[in-house]
Length: 110
Image 1 (tube, rainbow, N blue to C red):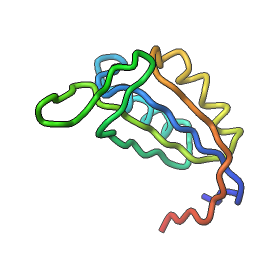
Image 2 (cartoon, rainbow, N blue to C red; image 1 turned 30 degrees about the vertical axis):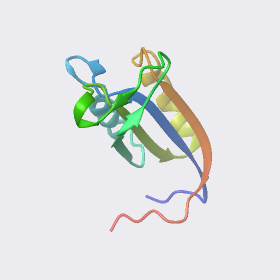
Image 3 (cartoon, rainbow, N blue to C red; image 1 turned 120 degrees about the vertical axis):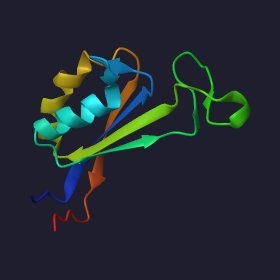
C-alpha cells in the first residue's frame, strides 16, 4: 500500500472498560478499521489521565484504576478516515476523537 506524503491521523480517546458487544471497545474499533481497509491502527494504554468527568485514572499501586485511558491512533488518507467516522461515531458514548493533518515519511509493508 502506498500512502501520500500528506495524510491524516485519527486519534480516539476512550476508557479501558468501555465495551461493544461484550468485548473491549478498543479491540472492536481496531477490528473495524482493519475490515474497512485502513492502513493500520495502534492502541496505547495510558498510565495517567482524566476526561470529561475530571476523574483521575492512574496505574499507581495504591490507587489501581480499572478504567485506564486508551488511545487508538489510525493514519490514512482523509477520505478513508472520513468514511470510517460514521461507523464508530455512534458506538463511542463517552470519549474524544481528533483528526489532524500529518506528514507521512514512509509506510513499509515488507
